[in-house]
Amino acid sequence: MATDPQVLLPAGWPRPKGYANGVAAHGRQVFIAGMIGWDADGQFQTDDFAAQARQALQHIVAVLAEAGGKPGHLVRMTWYVVDKREYLAAGREVGKAFRETIGHFDIAMTAVQVTALIEDRARVEIEATAVIPD
Image 1 (cartoon, rainbow, N blue to C red):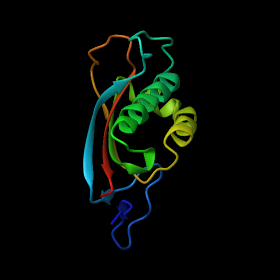
Image 2 (tube, helix red, strand yellow):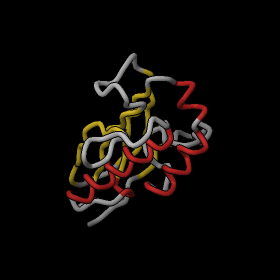
Image 3 (tube, rainbow, N blue to C red):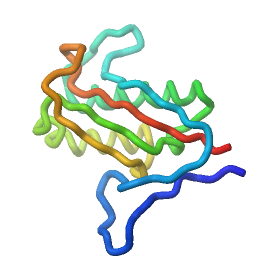
Image 4 (cartoon, rainbow, N blue to C red):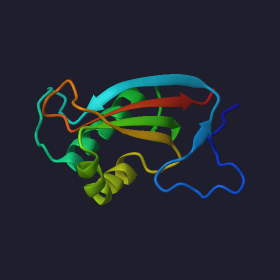
């Protein structure tokens, strides 16, 4: 029996904006490695944060599709950013890219500023977990 992920929101807590506090799901787990904003040939086309985030999200969707999944099966994401101010400044464009690529915000998410990413031109790296219902 297929079930959709259940958003976990303790009573009395305000609904978070742009993410979920927790998600419960049952099914086949898919773990997607950190994706960055280069193209399928491993080349960066831009140094723009929002554009790199969009590309990384598109890579997540492509890997998930290989497992027979879709964006609605995503339950968790961790964003690694090299500059939190750059991340916050790009919020509107990142939100648009997220809505157009993923389509919803009911995903448990964490964003962490790091000193650097392995690829010097990478501005963001996003890893994800999905659960495809049985």
